[in-house]
Length: 94
Image (spheres, one colour):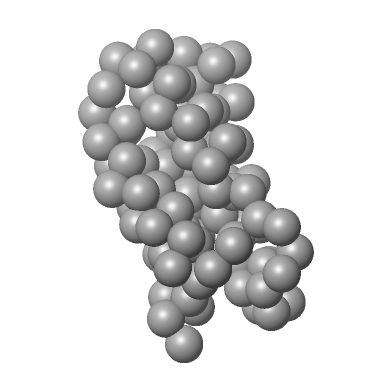
């Protein structure tokens, strides 16, 4: 997997997370589950990139779990997922 592939994944997540936040429960959950399935890593990057990616992935999963169990997600979890995904994306450009 190339850095370009990871950039595409991070950009997709940065586009889709804010959109999912405004969707119905069912649609938001589908979007977040898709992101969780596509933002995983294979351990081929530097430790800092792998850690940032894992943090973003875990926060995206936490959003999905919250929507699934509670029917909604607190703003703090959305904001954390977006911020951690931005951090991951930023590290991919260096």
